[in-house]
Amino acid sequence: MAESIGKSEGGDDMIRLISAQESAKYLGLSKTTFLRMVKDSDLPQPIRITERRIVWDKHDLDSYIDRIKTEKAPKFG
Image 1 (cartoon, rainbow, N blue to C red):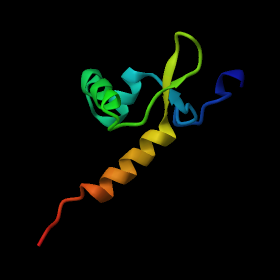
Image 2 (image 1 turned 45 degrees about the vertical axis):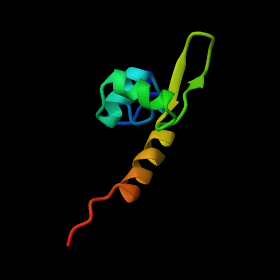
Image 3 (image 1 turned 90 degrees about the vertical axis):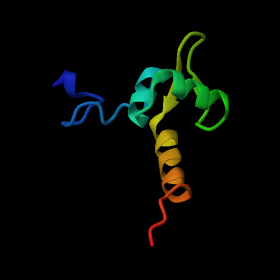
Image 4 (image 1 turned 90 degrees about the horizontal axis):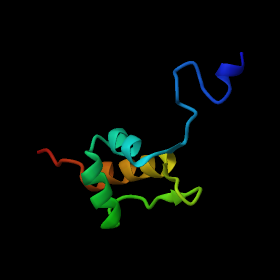
């Protein structure tokens, strides 16, 4: 029972803060492209949770996805 704390049946759906590598994968980007886009302020900025640990909030990444879906939606017809 203890192993299910913080996770849903689907796996890591409850994990909200993720690394640069995981964030890049979440968006379908290479880590290099992801970090370049963060540096250029095209993507959400990271959260420093310790001196050495930097993460991104999945909710911020989801908001980015929602924004680009409307801004960059293909126009048909």
